Length: 328
Figure 1 (cartoon, rainbow, N blue to C red):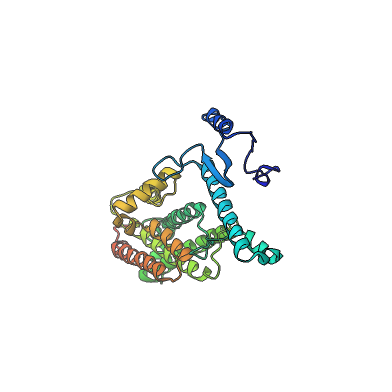
Figure 2 (tube, helix red, strand yellow; figure 1 turned 60 degrees about the horizontal axis):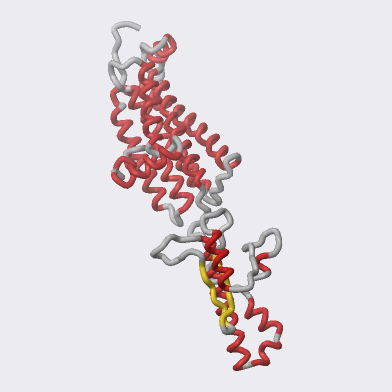
């Protein structure tokens, strides 16, 4: 006990008194103050007895300091009993320094271990949600690209429509260029997460690049689908992209602790909302890559994103067809 009360990192502030009554009085008087005593220790008929200031049973309020005192004294009593038993059965063993060292060594009943290759970090949720939002802001690239291939969009678009390149090839090249531009942007953001954000994916960088590729394709398809909406001004469609992505990011927990709690509640009560939310699917794909032993979960999320992309492209068929105009 003396060792526990000495030094700058002393665990206890020990006070010595002459009687159990005086010790009990000090403990009672300290209750409710800033310097409460955890309890007191006394010898009764050669045995150590510990009296705690507050109960530490599961049925009552849990107090840290009394629990620490109880744990230390329980160990002391157990070691004392072991030494007494050794003295009775094999006194010569106590003459062996190695035996004494083993006897006094702390017992490590638990071992700290991690069930995943990466230690969970609260910041990762924000990073992945931010990545999902950035990925689907790439829908603006597809939106602008497909708006500009309409012959009545601009003088340049009119000249293209009259050129030798077919409308189908123009649409395909526009799709490919929008996809690659969005993909390149996500690669830059991914490099930022790894280098600046300190997110370590280990040997799974390849699957992360695949996530970027699929996410950018789905975002491009979303922009293409929004470009096909009839009777809506082009400027308003840009606002629609912003609104969709910002709302979807809320369900990914992007906007702070409240948003995270809200997203968790939605996931528990209506998990199907996560399935139809592309931003959440991107977040969960990165989570699965980071923490699961296999890629099964990751490929599941990528499959959902690919299905979404097919649906968006199907909805955008109208905007991809060649149109007739009265004049250009």
